[in-house]
Each structure stands twice: as C-alpha cells, then as structure tokens.
Length: 263
Image (cartoon, rainbow, N blue to C red):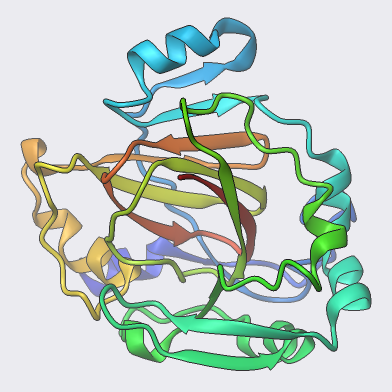
C-alpha cells in the first residue's frame, strides 16, 4: 500500500466528547481510528430468523457467522464504560500479553496505568513482540462482579461449557493469525475487523508482524481465491468462529470486547 493510500486509511478523529452511551468514554480526545471497515463476506443473521438447530446444521462446524441480537448486555455494557471500570478496578493488577503468534511475553501493570498510558494507537511498523495487549489472563475472582453480569450467546455446542476472555485495546491493535477451539467474539464498544481461514487453508503471515502490518502489506497482494472470510463487527453483534479456524483481528477504534470459548 502506497503512502497516499496509507494516509487515507487513517482518519484523525476530532477532539470532541462522544455521548456517554455511545463509546463509553473510550474515545475521548484526539485519537486515530481506522476508517476502512473492508468488505463483508460472512453471513449475518438476526436471532429472530435463526434457530439453534439451523445454527448447528449450517454453521457450527463449517463456517463463521455473525448473529445480531443474540444477547442483551445493556447492563454489562454500562459497567464496561471507561469511568465505571476505572472506578471499580483502577488499582487492580492486569496481565498484558505481547501480540505475536507463537511466543507471548507477560507484563503485570495496574489497570489505571494501562488505560492512561498504554491504551494507544498502534503504528503499522510496530512488531507484535513490542505490542502489549490486554485480553485473557483475567482474574475472575477480582473481576467477578463484572463477569457475572455478562450474558453469553445462547447458541452453544453439545458437550461444551463457556470460558470468557475480556479485553480492551487501542485502534490499530489486534492479534495476528492463530487458531484454537470454537467460540464467539462480541464487541461491547468500538469496532473489530475479523479475518478468517478454514483449517485446511492456512494464511501466509509473519508470526511477529501485526495484523495491521499484514493488512497493509500482504492483503493487497492476495488473489481473489486467496482472500479470507472477513467482516467488521459492531456492538450488538457476535461473531462465531468454528473449531481450528485461523483468525486474526484488528481493532478499528479503542475497543472493549469479550470472547466466549466453547471447550
């Protein structure tokens, strides 16, 4: 991607306060947001038009799906506002991980320090090993009052139970390609772009380059049959990914999100 295209890719947000119920206070002040949401080639279904049986037959084991209205997390969303989380958990220690594929370093910092100083936009040249990412490694004892308010997606898989991973990340951050068991990802605030490949069609990527780097340097070179399943999800939508599907994420805004792993 040339420099002109890269400049168009980023949009500098105005220094304004967003409505309290809009972004939860996570985008206050000037920050970089990613403008390009990209195409969407993943089925999007509304909960009212999809049964659990159809989900199991058409999607659960074969392809990703975005479901709208699968949960009502109004209360959880309120508790995830910037002011609420800082008030309740500002002095608690959180564990951050580097955002690379195979080797994760861990750093423990106070949650307030993470929000005030480390929750920043990521540059395209930043390496995964240089990016500290808050996702997973949650202390469910200290954060119990928050997690007990979360309502997980109701469509589950036989003989599985849910496990949650909660995260907050700045624009331009994300996790590079990796795979694990099936699950859901729900955005509480912000927008998150997803890229997915089936197990038998692994993507080409550098394990220590970020998703933003892959998108700007690798993605434009892909042929039409090499393109991933992809879409950008927003609050009120949950993306389901099947077992062992390769996936990478890119936060377009400062995002608050939670995944439900079905193990």
